[in-house]
Image (cartoon, rainbow, N blue to C red; front, side, top):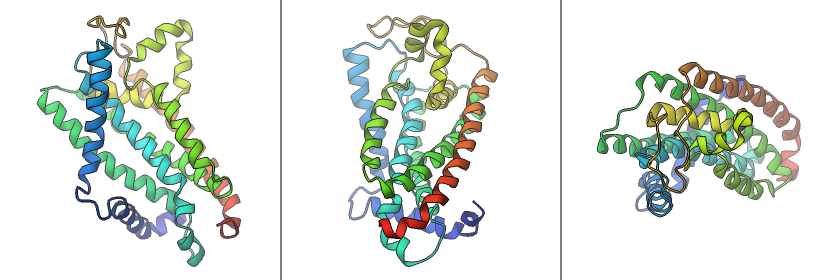
Length: 279
C-alpha cells in the first residue's frame, strides 16, 4: 500500500480514465448514473409495493437506502475483477503497482455512488423525509468499511481472474444471489423472524450489517406494524436496536475487511509475477 500511495497521482488519472471510457460517445454521459437508481426504484416500487404489497412505509426511501451501497459494492467488484485483464497492454508496457488497477475501478464506482446519492437526497426532499441524524456517523463508517471490503475482494478477484477468466462471469451469478439474500427490497425482520434464535447468523453476510446501517441512518423507521401486505407480515422494518448495536456490527465487518485486504494484497503479490505470461 506504500507503493500505491507513492503512485496516487497515477491512481487519480486511472480513475478519470475509467469514468471517461465508461460513457465515451454517450449523449447522456454521467446522467446514466442517475438513471440507474431511478429505473430500479420504479421497477421495484411497482413490483413490491403495488403488486406484492410490501407494507413498507415510504418504500422509495427504504429501497434507495439499501440499493445505493449495494450498487457501489457490485460495481466495485465488477470493475476491479476485470481490471488487470482489461488493461493488459498497460501492464506489459510499464512498471507501476498493479494493485492500482482494481483500486481505480473502485474509485470510479465511488464517483458513481456520489452521483447516485443525488437521487436519494432528492427523494428525501420530495417526500420531506428526515433521516436519523444521530445514526449518520454509522452510515459514514459503513461507507468506509464498504470501500475496504470492496478493495479486499476486488484486489483478490482481479489477480485470480488473470489465471481463471471464468471468475468475472461467476461473479455475476454470485452477486445476483448475494443481492437477494441481503435485505434491500424486503425487511430484515422477514429473515430474522424465520430464523428466530439463530438470526445472528444473518450477520455472517457482511453486506447485511452495512445495508442495515445505511437503512437505519437514512430510512429511520424501526418498529411498529406494517400496513399488512402479503410481504408485510413482520412486526417491524429494521432491528429496534441501539446505536452501539449497529456500530458494533459495522466495526466487526471493518476488522474482518482489513484482515481480508491484507490477505488479498499478499495473494496479489504472489500471483502478479506471472501476469505478463498469462496476459
